Image 1 (cartoon, rainbow, N blue to C red):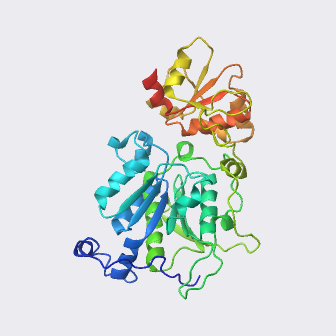
Image 2 (tube, helix red, strand yellow):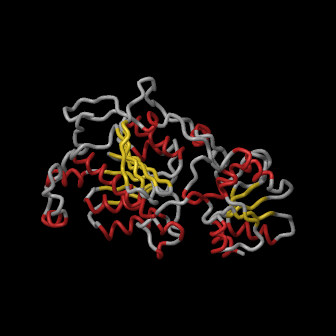
Image 3 (cartoon, rainbow, N blue to C red):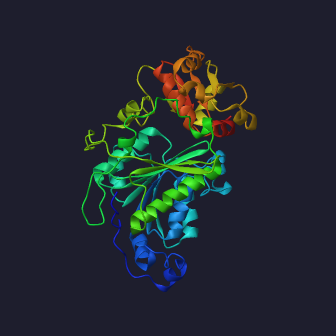
Amino acid sequence: MTSLAPLVAPGPELDAARLARYARHLPLPGVGPEGQRRLAAARVLVVGAGGLGSPALQYLAAAGVGTLGVVDDDVVDLSNLQRQVVHGTADLGRPKVESARDRLADLAPDVEVVTHPVRLTPENVLEIVGGYDVVLDGADNFPTRYLVSDAAEILGVPVVWGAIHQFDGQVAVFWGAPVLDDGARERGVTYRDVFPVPPPPGTVPDCATGGVLGALCGTVGSVMATETVKLITGAGTTLLGRIAVYDALELSWRQLAVRPDPTREPVAELLADDAAYAAFCGLPAPVGGTADAGTGTTGGGLGPASMSAVDAAALLAGDAPVALVDVREDWEVQALPVAGATVSPSGGFLGGGDGAAAAISALPADRPVLLVCAAGARSARVADVARAAGVDARSVEGGAPALLLAI
């Protein structure tokens, strides 16, 4: 790949305070005062304030990136703190975007943090991504990764992508039409070139079921921040055209060369809606994706797809029969048990094949089934699968902690 032009034009001259704060950047070849001014003028969007977003956000703020956007619709959970180091114990239950904003304000007061407490959808992604120079994709699910890739290709925005699993990590730079050092453009590689189809559902377990080494997030997230700084300033050679693969157990890096697929038509428009991206990834439509947003119900005569912990507690206390199923792992249940719940870990439902069929068939079909997990994310995915099979499954919002408070 020919050298890339700096992504962002320099901002105003640095004042005395910024010269002092960024004094260790200024001697660096390829950065220097001009590169620091480019960083100050840059607008970077980070998708996910989780394991990868946490270190990336902190290093980008410390580096002096002028505007940082944070997209996340989740709240801080105790299990996050093992790896999501932008949050602290005092932030439990807070929206992650707010927790991250406050941490970054303390770390770098001159950096503007823009919070987007939403889930990215085909309806909002172009407007959100279009306000930034580069996107860091730290999403933990495949529909969002394809959505971010499609939006970025349409808008001509580069994507710094990272992924982690247990002890392994990957980092790459994707850009459908990069600007070269001579001002020309050429066909670049995108996420869809490398991963034209997603893996079958259930073959890649999430952090809750497969686990992840907390420090691995710091390694991969820091590399993502480094690649972003290089894109903005024009320093060095980016990972565009390469994927860096990290094995923490062996402490080894290797690189894979990747190229654009000449037979792939460039993305010109997004898929229709959330349900279309879910279907492309072989998943059920998101809860509420094709439903009345005010009621949280879906078709087919089933009850609500999710309910508040208060409503769930009332249903459990009533006379009507109802089943309570805890989809957390055994060790999670031991740490915070829910009396009366049948334990059936989410991996059994989401792994596909005979195992998933058996897990679903074990659910009672003659009564509502309340599903709980640590915070509501896993139970919502299990509810999607169960409801697609005709089970009246309902995810309890806020998970086991919220239900125990409501009972």
